Amino acid sequence: MTPITALAAFALMSIAMIGFEIMYTYATQGFGYGFSANRPNVTFSPFAIRVKRALQNQTESAMYIVPLIAAVQLLGLTGNGISLALALIIFGRMAFVALYYTGIPFIRVPAFVCGTVPSIYLAIMVLTAAGAA
Image 1 (tube, rainbow, N blue to C red):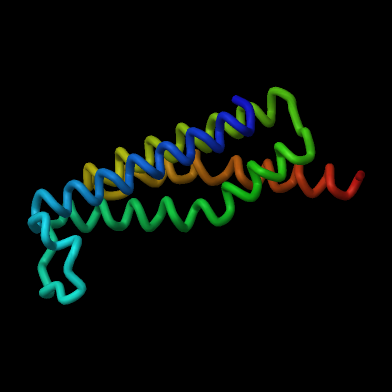
Image 2 (spheres, rainbow, N blue to C red):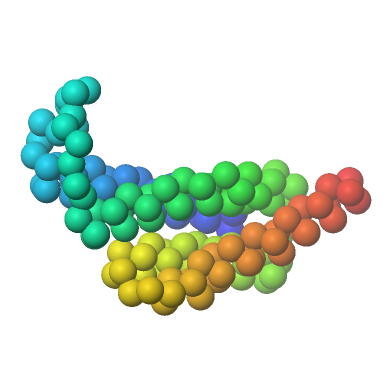
């Protein structure tokens, strides 16, 4: 996987999650819910809470994943290790989101690790390449 492909995949996944969260909220709270600044306090279902938390986690992970992938691209880093790390990040994040939606406790942790640990590898590669430049 190339860095540009990984960035595009991460963006598409994030857009899909945002869209799903919005549509699910409209479906369960009514269309007007999204247009009112004076929303009543509502109790969200356990699934709605998981959808919101998965989106929050995606947003938080973007803070370290997107800059690392951009740095990989800007530095022109290539190779099988880089490609594998990028693929693991994307597929790990996809699995994490799908598993988070299911609500099965702890099953999403391996997917989270799969989507996060390769970031450490990329950070080391970026720092090594930046130090050598």
